[in-house]
Amino acid sequence: MPGFPPIDLSGDHHIHTKLCNHASGEMEEYVQAAVRKGFQSMTFLEHLECGLLYEQQLWLTPELFTQYFEEGERLRTKYAGQITVRLGVEIGWNAAAVDELSAALCRFPFEHRGLSCHFYFDGSSHLNMLSSRQEHINALSAVGADKVLDAYFNSLIEACGTIPCDKLCHLDAALRHLPDVRLTDHHQQQISQLLRLMKEKNIALEVNTSGYAVRIQPYPSLDIIWQASELGITLIPGSDAHHPQQVGRFFERLE
Image (cartoon, rainbow, N blue to C red; front, side, top):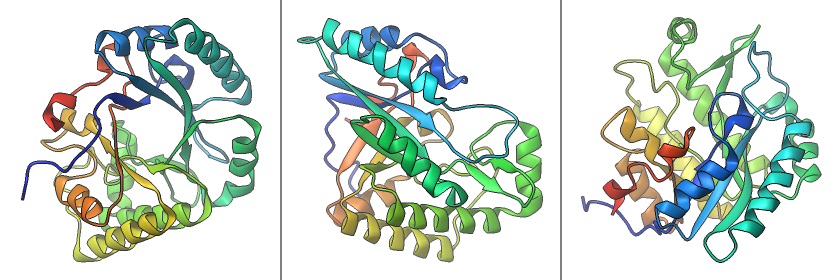
């Protein structure tokens, strides 16, 4: 297998800030970091979640999204000529809150829409599939990795067919902190179905380099990236930065 299919690395298109309540750094610090890296463009992709039964707020309220756009417009003007700043959103899929999600998406002029799924509903609460917190790892392990992953990939298929979006984020990152998780043949079939739907809907695939901090590949894995490339699906790089120093992290591994 060749090392990596063609991908435009002139911009980082998955960046968070302290507004999401689980990152650090002001928006301007991220812009300055991207300028220092020599990027031509960057995209903030702040979290939108609705209808979750979860003890922490790891996403933006409408009030915070208003602040986000006000500061983003200021930075777009200030750094014009140095870098293109885009204000996007990472939409967290929740099948029980589609109307609420759609209303939130209509409220703000998001320039880039990434779609993801972070939470598994166990019947009483939502468990964060991407969390390193031991209580979530234990609870998800008790449910069973195969069952959780089956629900996760089905959720992504449903989400891509329901919510208009530009790209799918970190496709295979679910259960990233569970040891020895392996995708079954059934999961691979779900991924193939998902990629075909993405091609049909003209949804790009994000190559999320935060994977290199956990494993030897990005999210998704290289074999999935090649499947997408062979279908003609556009690849979009993103660092999933949660600190200004993480902007463009591991991009050199994609060169």
